[in-house]
Length: 169
Image (tube, rainbow, N blue to C red; front, side, top):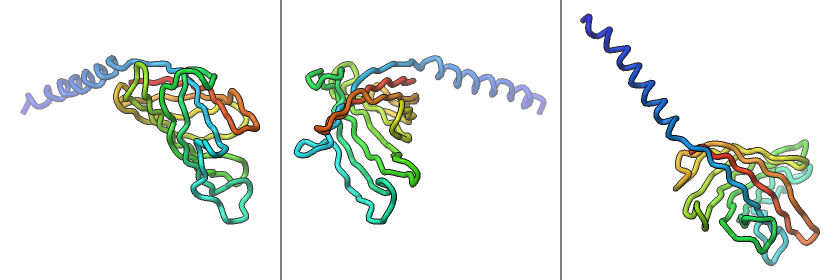
């Protein structure tokens, strides 16, 4: 029975070795891209699928579905690299705020066929940070965060947001 006590340190060492070796294999990637939205028909890239019928302030209870373009630059003519697809219910009684679930689906370039999933709160008036909660392809087991700022918006319904994503995978 004396040998069972010496087995515990060996087991702890093996568990520690496995945990640290996986951490060393991770890399961090910085992505920079622009999200292009058009919220006016006939070419709208977002729609309201649930409209709040109560007398709630703002749009509380409204749910948006979207399929935005991801481009390399802020110009509408810049290279299309993917889509940003997801949903955004309005969740606050006190201010305009959304709980956003968004998939960045890359369809061209180095990350073609890969995707990132991010989730988090969005409001007006400043940078928005969201957690990266997963990914596929090159980004399998991803974690990290995104920061985006509104770059441009006009009365014709075009909105451009600049994104920086920091991905550990």
